[in-house]
Image (cartoon, rainbow, N blue to C red; front, top):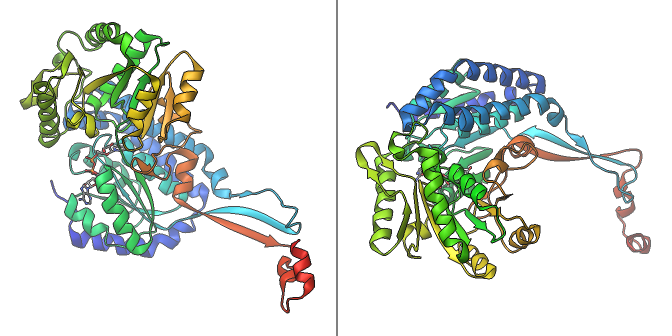
Length: 463
Ligand code: NAD
């Protein structure tokens, strides 16, 4: 695969630096037209997108339609509908202290933007964040993952038909190319990936005090109450965990389940996994593969290690290295120091941890880094509210999983180790814009009461 050369990166950066004022002064209507063209171009390339994802990791056409194409088209439609209103800015309420001041917020483009993306949703993630950056009026360098080369080619073709490189440019490469990009001064860097690389990005951004959004990962738990509609919850978890073969940042990483439900939930997982994927998931057209050998080895080693240390296999467990296939696997009794319990799993392996008291389950969550997502399955709102109040996570979904990311009125993002800043919809537009405060003073300057020379009267005014 041909990566973007260092000199090409330098040339694109300089071209975008020159062009950023033109992009900045584009009207919201012009940006909306570009988004409409992008939507049309994606629609006419849906087949090519599905084929590319299948080549990259055996992702089924339906799964690509739902999790990649629908997600991007949905976001584009939101922006097309709202960009003119959002870009207009808004007045804020008057204050009695400032009777003659008209106060407002303006949303101006940040300027020159770098977006760095991972491989796990290689169409959805780059495009969703790019849409927000274009809508906000920025020039953008879009660094794609080195592990999704077929999808990258389709993205390049789609964007190349609409944008000049001085406005939107795709950059291909790995650590070397990204490290070079990170030496440059950007007004905003939007990074999606692991917390470890997020720290590298944040450090590089600090050299120029570039603004950042970090969309990271972590261990996102799903906690079950004893008062739960168990069959529905298990079906729900099977979809959320095994879609994209578990390679989803907000997938339920592990389950916390009341101990009395042990035997019932284990029977249900066996039954419902067979219902979902048949007796041999390797033959299921719906089940994806692991993206590359390195990820396959990481997961298969952790699974082998966990089993040799006494983990109990509830379902799955079969592996096929040639295909990078890992059967949808459910385990219990995984050692606390096994990578499956210490690191983000990011694959189709689901440990269940049984708990006795809710306080134990909450402390299990809170001993780890703050998760990107938390799922609560309960028929009792007191239980859900208790868990929400005693934990800190990026987003939460009660009695469902992962759909919070699609809600047009909710931001997407983590907290501390799982992310900094917010993306998608209005929140994405805001992240790629500078929210500028304007105080427009009418008639008399308000500061007049403080002007020199200070007198006793000035003190009295403060009371
Ligand atoms: P990664 O952090 O290894 O790579 C992400 C990007 O950074 C890639 O473009 C890669 O080329 C680049 N990169 C890798 N190492 C680098 C280095 N040393 N210096 C500079 N750049 C470097 O992540 P990944 O394996 O591609 O993706 C998996 C991670 O992403 C998981 O932790 C997952 O949870 C997270 N993720 C988060 C979200 C979210 O929205 N919060 C979405 C998807 C994935």
